[in-house]
Amino acid sequence: MRKLIHLFIFLILTGSSSILAQSISMSPTRLFFTGNPGEKVTQTVTLQNSSDKDYVFNLNYKDWVREEDGNKVYLEAGSSKTSNAAWLSTLENAVTVPAKSTKEIVVTMQIPANASKSTVTNSMLFFTQLPQQADQARIQNGIGIITLFEVGLHIFYTPPGNQKKSLDITNISEVSNENTANRKVAVSIHNDGNTINDATVEFELTNTDNGKEIKLPAISISMLPNTDQVVQFSLPENISGNFLGVAIIKMAGSNDLRVGEKNFKF
Image 1 (cartoon, one colour):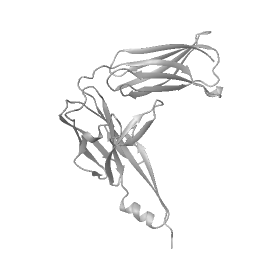
Image 2 (cartoon, one colour):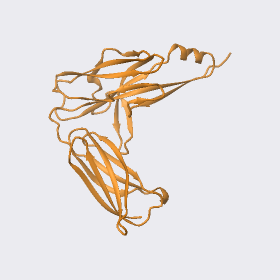
Image 3 (tube, helix red, strand yellow):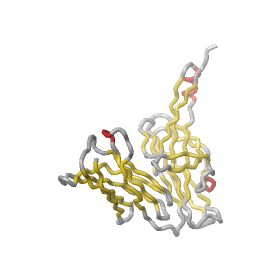
Image 4 (cartoon, rainbow, N blue to C red):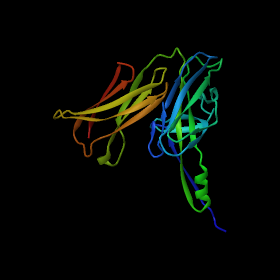
């Protein structure tokens, strides 16, 4: 008897609206809901299929939290204290996006009557690709590898009264690393506002001996209220000398800047 080996590879794509390999795109990649307790609100997300084959997706919800290093951890729906997964629904539990076409999915949020008037909640709606008949046939003929993928849609709820946008630089330090050729500086940030905050973090170094400036590539972040994140910047290889390091946070939709400084000797 021939032994069949099934190998399914799932790719989770949540940070970009473009999925190049499968020619599927999603817009938008984040939904921001607001409303009063007891209200029902809806928004629409669009999947576009530019390929020559149909795609079928199963819809399912998960919770997620972001760790201090910026990585997401996915949890069962309803397990996070800030989950809004139970508030969400769609008309279909599975959708087909035909070749060379688009599919609109209406996402409904029923805000509970007892919902907090101050807590921001979040979850994620996953569109999980289902294998097609042709894929199943290939596997039945022997060893097969099928690459499937999940598209993640971030969903947020912010109470109408939450308007304070603020980030605080709590620390700037060099990351401990025995490899002096790969040094890093860490900027610790706390969201002390009460709303989701998209921002860009920049870091500049000025050699205090000769005035030479080094601007490192900016890093984009998105932080929920009352969370912390550590953003790491890689320093130029074999950097040496006395430097003044300046961290600058530019918040989207605000003219306020947050600036922090620290002297370094490399």
